[in-house]
Amino acid sequence: MTTEFDEAVVVAQVTERLVERFPDVDPAHVGDLVREEVSALAKRPVHDYVAVLGERAVKKKLKAERVR
Image 1 (cartoon, one colour):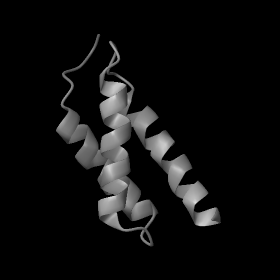
Image 2: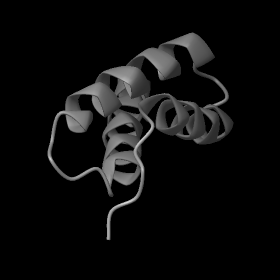
Image 3: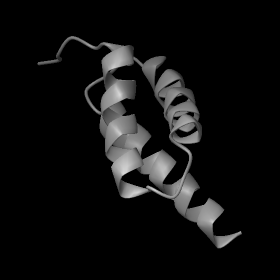
Image 4: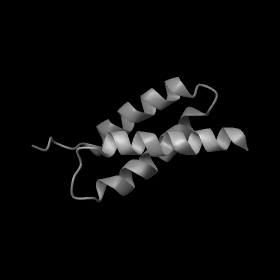
């Protein structure tokens, strides 16, 4: 069973979690990355895992940015 998908809510929730996890990164940058990932995933037919997949992708990007 799928649930109602609200892209704005997913973006807000994932951004909030990642801002807490990466306090040294500008929250606006985190939000931009989350919006980009969630928007790309939202075009897929199944939305059940958009939050999880989006969060994982952005975490990976943020960790990579720290290494630079």
